[in-house]
Length: 360
Image 1 (cartoon, helix red, strand yellow):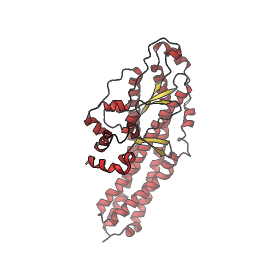
Image 2 (cartoon, helix red, strand yellow):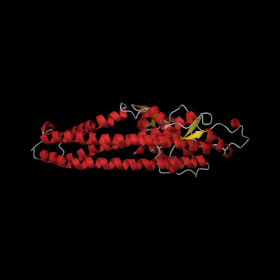
Image 3 (cartoon, rainbow, N blue to C red):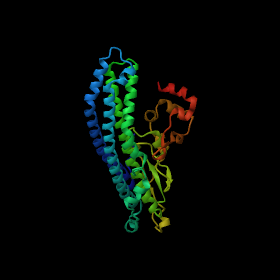
Image 4 (cartoon, rainbow, N blue to C red):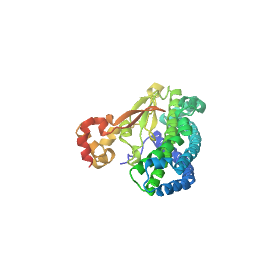
């Protein structure tokens, strides 16, 4: 399912830069996972104490569990431990995003230089407007102490996890689950705090990188007035969603944000002005990126079904929606409008039922 090897240096570099970004993000994720592992370990005795206390009740009710001293103790310790972790995650996110801004500025300059003919590269390098990372940090906005991300990690994460654990635990007791199964519920809900922080950290870092790209683009708009959406579908790993495939190869102006979904891997590729407008009588060999729809139509039916799912594939083949409809906007409190893959219900409303059956 992979695309042919890129034939233009800027596309080769864009793929290499993306791989570097994801490798760096994985390193930071490992630190978060290890730190959250400490939270698990420090809570084990309290979890076991609560399980034992529930087990000692002949026929426990949610109200009885809620009044147990072991329940209140665990709740307080979750709040303390996860809040402490949230402070660590906030520092990691902040440091990672600031590093991504510097990297984004550097990468965009390199991509821009690779996008123009060799005779122009030395002149462009000398005249390229380089921004100070501090200016981009101010523009990005979500790194401040009053930002929703900072508040969510340092003020709200611990309470949110403690509340979620309590609600699921009480519900499981109400369903008559045994204490050991209830313990698994506790551990599962604790894990949601880690999942949320990992997703939050990765999204913030990649968003900061892309906004640094855009800031450098705007500062050098005489050469790069726009950009081209480039998804990760050429990796051939089958993990690229249909929203990103639909956006792949689309053209955008410098004032447009690459509003990928949370944890999205898409990047921007510079779209420079024509060589003729620069006074160069050279063949125009700017990078050509095929539209995602054209690429998708060139895949086998089995590959198309794998990417879309059987129900959506059949609806698409029946002409029930256009390919571009697969990218659906949604609002986020931190980033504003973002894009995600549309569901069959999004696309067809109640008429989706007949195609859901195709998935079975």
